[in-house]
Image 1: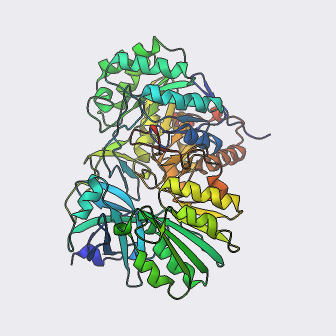
Image 2 (image 1 turned 90 degrees about the vertical axis):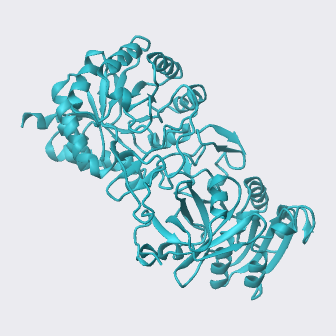
Image 3 (image 1 turned 180 degrees about the vertical axis):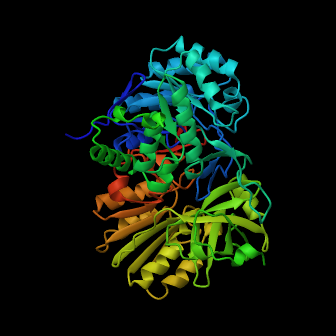
Length: 304
Length: 279
């Protein structure tokens, strides 16, 4: 019998453990549909705020060879406009996780409620954008604020609520515990690592915003360590993200304790077929190891 | 000359900061710049480069010439902050380049029509060169606003001297036919049996070119323009509905078989916040 890739992440039932990471391609319903058709178990939207945002001027992405450096500046069309995209994606049967960001607990409540009404299957709180002032990581550093936002959102929606954590803190496990105590359903780890690149000819930082977030291969061991440590310390599921490029990487994250994984940079490096390739690789690995179900080896490495 | 200008780069994603070797005013609003860049000089017709204007912006620009001496040419119309900043650059000043990116025109040996509109003529120049090299019979229909905006008209005329037809239209009739290049296309496409239509220009014009080509059963390749930010297929800014086609990596050149399934083509684009806007 073929191994079963189906997983249940805190109530979010997905056909396989691969998901599209927030911020990647998720501007339009057609992109979400395309990624879902390419094999993703679920897709996370761009991070959406109350009002439209243009984002930063270019350069917003630098391709470093060992990862991508980005400072997009949270461009998004605003919740009311974006709900149209969610509704269209849902009409096509896509599993949609809505990423939201804001400054106030009431912003998060409004955003989560509107996403739920539009049909979103889960919410992912972006508490960790490393390069926009007043939102994201500045909130992600403050345990009290995280507690407030998670509790606030949990009190207004029925769908699962995930929170995405920044690695740019002294101890990510402490932050994960705070989120768990506040009632979060799952933890996504990690967001990008604060980083920069400088052009030596001009002496200028390459990103228009100077500082951005690093994703891809370079951060994979950091992400893997975070997933391992968090999943050992909390009872809620952990969704692993950070530099996963192939099925071997995906297996390592599942072994480290991730119940699902997200892909972003892999799309630039490997193309949209990477979802399918990882799922096929997972099946082969499971057959070889005698696993019938993904759950049989999630967190396997904890025993060492 | 700076060090980076002579370095041999093999990674298209690496930003190369290069001195501008030559600046040429093409029309009252359009300027060309020549750079020495190994990778872009080996680009295929239809590909684009990401041009970094340090401290201002980074924008996609068509490569309007690829030369054998490892130099290439970019051509830009003054429309906003980034393009105005580029127009202020003089010979010897530096800009950053990465690429070339995107797909390219598929070359067809046979009878082909090319329809260019305004700055859409930029990627058409290297296309003409390659098509002539492989022995195609060319009919170029170039459309312009007026006779002060005849971008690459003379250059195209020189190229087509060796064989090929050049028809020109201006909206005010100050040169050639008065009207749109699509008016000429509707007539011209009936005069022979054509194997391919190529087009680049304003999308509303290209949508008409598409309709005419479809009605006459001739395949089309159109080079589309969208707000391209990352150029590597991850940011989602340039995506067309409903197929989710990424213009930056699966374009900019799209064929009839794809275009006919894109409701956005000729109608919608997305602004910097990602909101759908009418073209």
